[in-house]
Length: 241
Ligand code: C5P
View 1 (tube, rainbow, N blue to C red):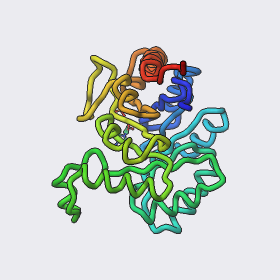
View 2 (tube, helix red, strand yellow):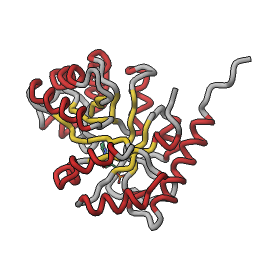
View 3 (cartoon, rainbow, N blue to C red):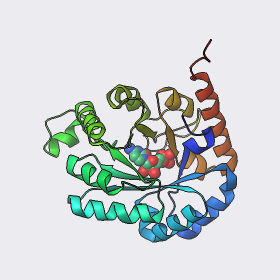
């Protein structure tokens, strides 16, 4: 069962201060139920803010891309589970993924793995010592994430169609790089529309600038939710009989 269309939209709170985040959340009101907090806000008071937002009934995705020795990853994940976060990202290294999955047991926290950073190309992987192309490494790490019991993957709209057959129907695919038709792409290179991302198999869409930089952010969020709803209806299996 997929969540309601509104609950499949995650808005990236890519702002420099808690005051700016509070103002944005107040403007978005009931239009948005799920927020992503990354390095910028997390390192400027955003962890306490995340706790408060979770206490106010919003869902929280902490995009912290954890990676350390297993014991340190595990204790960090236990703290984030107590805070009330719903999603946290880890880099898709087997030891890191094992530690995170074990540590979230018994909580509502779900672990998302980042296979290969979207800013990396084959030359970046070679420079880092890997003898894999980006798609080869993404496929390999997706299969490892599945076998370890990771809850989902962060992947581009183009990648999700390739990764869905590897991870099966139950793992969550969370897709950033979303641009409504006609929107500015900014620095994103591999963008898809909300409808295309849903059709390619995404469970959740992460949207930053098309909402937070809009003149009317809640109207922009509502329009994306409407597009998610239309795309999910279009791809529902026909009723039996
Ligand atoms: O403003 P925009 O919609 O491009 O924001 C997308 C968000 O998703 C940003 O917070 C960015 O850091 C995040 N993200 C991404 N690509 C990834 C992982 C996360 O764009 N592979």
